[in-house]
Image 1: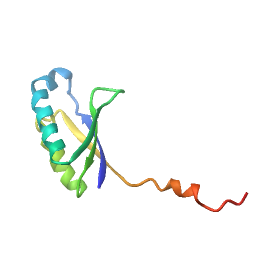
Image 2: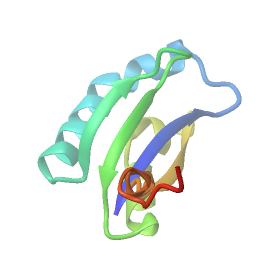
Image 3: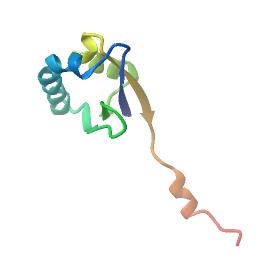
Length: 99
């Protein structure tokens, strides 16, 4: 299952609260990348944070992996997990036309 995972800063979060955990955050991300869970990661351009494209057997399994990020463990972020599916709109290209 492909997932879009967006971090959610929790009340009281700040760059200063992130700073002591950032190296461990990157290390955890690297482990998730090597395991095949994390397919892509991007910095958000609208605010401080990341967007992760992940692959997981279930949303529950993804929640467990994301909860192990150091920033989540210390309570400065949570995660929004959005399941993604194949885009089937392409079928309109091959549908019979009434025109």
